[in-house]
Structure formats: C-alpha cells, structure tokens
Image 1 (cartoon, rainbow, N blue to C red):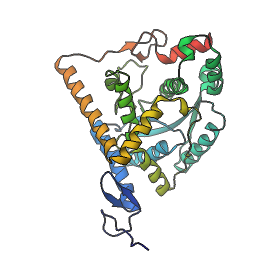
Image 2: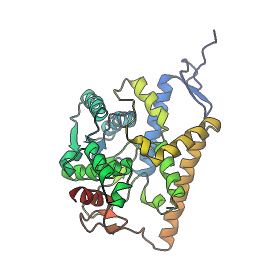
Image 3: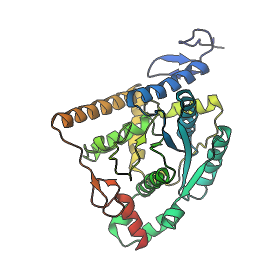
Image 4: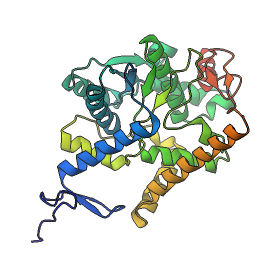
Length: 322
C-alpha cells in the first residue's frame, strides 16, 4: 500500500488532486482556495464585478455554471451591492434539458436564488428539437448547412441578452472556462478569422447602444476538469452529460486535439490561453496607436451589435418564419 502524499501547499493534509501541468499535489481545501483565487484574479485583471452591478448569471445545470454561481455568490457578498440573477435558457432538448434544469433549480435553491427561465419556444415558437427537424427538411442551403450547435449557440446568446435587458442587468456572466477560450481561439485561426480574436474576450466591449449587454467570463483562468473537481468537493448539484447535438460541432474536434495535447504535454492549454491573451492585447495596442476602432455594425433588423448587416440570430429567426 502506497504512502499518502502530503499537500504541497499546506504541508499538513493529504493530497487528493494532482495537477500535472504545475506539478502540484493538493488537498481539497487548498485546491478549492486555488480555484477561487483564479476567479478573483480574473476579476482583478478584467474588472468583472463592481459595486452596483446587476448581473445575469447564465445557469445551464452543468459543472461550470454551478461552480461559477457558487464563487460569484461569495464574491458578491464580500464586495457588497452586487445583485446576481440566475437565468437558464431552455432550448427544448428532450431527454437532456429536463435533467439539467432540475440540477439548476437545486443549485439556485441551495444558494437562496430564484431561477428565471427563458425558452426557445417563447422566442421562436419552436423547441430546438423541432428547429433541427425543420433544418433537415429545409430547401434553403444556408439554413440546411448550419450546425445544430451554431443554431443553438446563436439563439442562446441572443435570448440571454434579451433576458438581461428585460431584467435590467448591466452584465451577463457566462461559464466559459480556459478550455473554451483556447478552443475558440484555435477555431478562429483554423477558419482564417483573426478578427474573431478581437470579437470575443474576458469582457465584451459595450457599445452603449442600449441593446447589447456586456458579457463577462469569470472562469477564464480555470481548466474545465477543475470545475468538476470543485463541484464535487463543494457538494454542488450539477448534471454530467453531453448534449445529444454536440456530435455535430466542429468544436469537438478542436477539444479532442487540445485534450490529447495536454495529456502528452501538460500545460499546453494554459500556453494557448496565454497566447490568446497576449495577441489580443497586442491587437488592442495597435488599434489604440492607430486610433482604429474594431469594426462593429448594427443589425438592420434588431439593431443589436453584429459584424454583418443582419445578425445570425435574426437570420435563424427569419429562416423559421419562412
């Protein structure tokens, strides 16, 4: 029987988690403290939570949003005068969303919050399952070739923004972790879309148009697996399962590549994150020197911020109407 490994941090308790990228073996208490320090660092670096904020917190029922709500709740109480409003977007995915919704409701109840729910049915008059069936039968080539995750992600983002406007929030917190940021960065590169690096970030720009609520990503320094560890150690309810439509996503290929690379070369994911943040900072400095503002248009239909004449959400809604 092997001897127990002592925590590298406190040098007192037994280590239960090994972080290969840093060589650290941590006990449960020191790991949770590390997790929370990373969220606080994101707040310091990018000014995410401030007194007087009214923040919609995107809750999915998964590990990332569960960990995020728990830590943000602690931070909000410490900062003071910060209001958190948990919101779940119900896409309408049979066999999946009901399970995650139940966990989300348990999470919010345990923290003393009421969960507010907005649905695709309320927005488009159809559940995602119905939308995908219509897409598969559609004769419109642009709509027919759209991936399920592209449709879902577009409508989720659109609806979460509408929810924030309706609830009077000035920010939206989403549970994108370090893995998600690295995947999006690589996807932009593989699609030859370097401008995409400027379009997404730890805190989205606010055009003060009254139609686009800034989005913050408190988990930007947190690897995906560690959200699950944190939830388990804190006893937070969450659903561990994949969306049935995720098999269509290009992101899945990039995710597998990064996971395989991390397994062989620990620290790769943090290196990708560091590269992204460094490049984004350089682009911002170049724009500042040239007095150039990032290209930003307004959707001709809804008036919201977008990179084309009509935003993707309005395109999808138009396809459904037709």
